[in-house]
Image 1 (cartoon, helix red, strand yellow):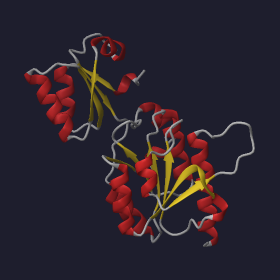
Image 2: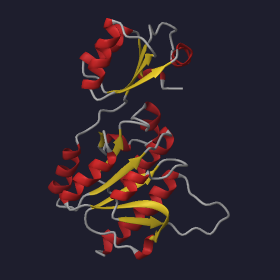
Image 3: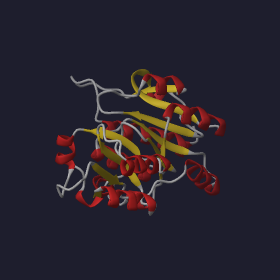
Length: 248
């Protein structure tokens, strides 16, 4: 269930929200609907960078809070996204090596909020999330972040693997969480660092992992083989913090 305050229903209301520049995360459209108003909404949603998802009437009815969605429901972000360049600019202005969190398919809003909170406390300059197959900045995320979203910018990109490749030009090295990687204490995690955390269950995708320079394994001694995504993010983040504090 989406946050009620973040849902906009009906063709005119959704179009007005897009026209007013509200941070629309995604637009749900009745599958097969191709009339003029819906085509206009789809065009404006693409221009705004919102994800478009096609759903059955039954699914739209489930998402609807009013029962009058007219085949279109939009979910707005609770906070506006920022440009990736603004995050890098912030690091430069502080005279610090960039420290970024890149989240590959985190779909649980509670995990996303918890990771944003950890990223802020660990001194990261920003968080990067993909547009597709990932939670957006909903009210649940904002509340779970415990206020961190007021201070930590979040950028949303179309292609995470391509973004990593581009950020390497800024001198940033990328480390992903991976159970088959090198024990994190044996890695050098200083300088410009991008910490890549994969989705719940699936982990970091193959394409994104191939773009990373290092894969870090958290030592574990229990009978289960993984940690919650937000917990793994916290453990790895503070190993990076430890190394940054002691300068390697």
